[in-house]
Length: 288
Image (tube, rainbow, N blue to C red):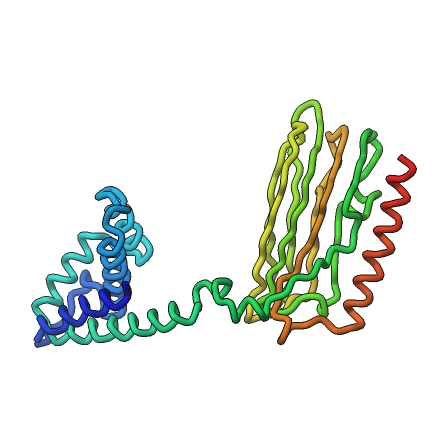
């Protein structure tokens, strides 16, 4: 598909062969390069997968390309007309678009955009459960005087920066059922703090309407800053909730086992804590 893309670009170069001042309403060369690359890529996809795209699909895709580059079809068409009258300028643009397509082809061939599809990359990926709270929480009757802070398992905060590294992926899963007479809203999620003072979060609101919900979060940590702490929220508040059942909580770290392996002492500490929590849970549910 990319080969077809490159041939079409070469054909455009051959057709081109003066340079006046560019009007302000005409896209500059970098802007034209970016828009043309996306347009030719879209047209190549349409050629390869003809039956899969209707005219409306194509219109929406091109509209999305113009919106992505903060321009319009009219502005792009007028810019293309101007550059067609200045073929030397247009030829330089198309050469850069062609170079960009070669780089794109290289990245596709080497699984840059979907590393999970590469078998050799899969060999280096491992998963480890970091959850250090109770995996199952059952509160059949919650009194108005109960506070969420009384059960530390509803929050989990980690300030040990040896647990996660740059480019790690954190996957947080839980199955939850909450009941309240007026379908109270509660929140679950993750909060991250970094060494440059910045923070970000992922939050999801649900209704305590007796439905069983599976909630899933996925966070890829940035590669340009270090994580200093993170907080996992199972339920932000018990206010208005009469009954709560949480099951199968997990917090999986997906990482490069060759470069970002946890130290033996950290692994041992996590496993020992998880084993002790399992023992407590088994005794709790045996009594019930």
